[in-house]
Length: 85
Image 1 (tube, helix red, strand yellow):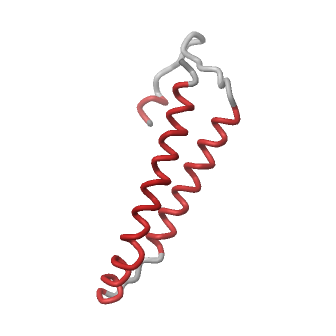
Image 2: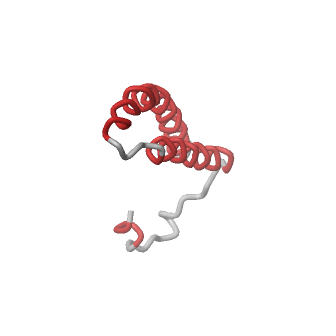
């Protein structure tokens, strides 16, 4: 991303946002996904014995929900980018 900021854009390359609702929805879904992901990671215990139990009880189950949530976010972002075509 940093490398693309250095490239100057011309008036022809500038993309006009056609649907603000889709953009805001994608941004909110992405933020909610990151919050859910980091909430699960921040609750991870430090002790090894507690860690094994946490992996089995929480992280294994949450991977199904986070995977489905990630698929929804990817579909929304895909909708946002395909809308410009």
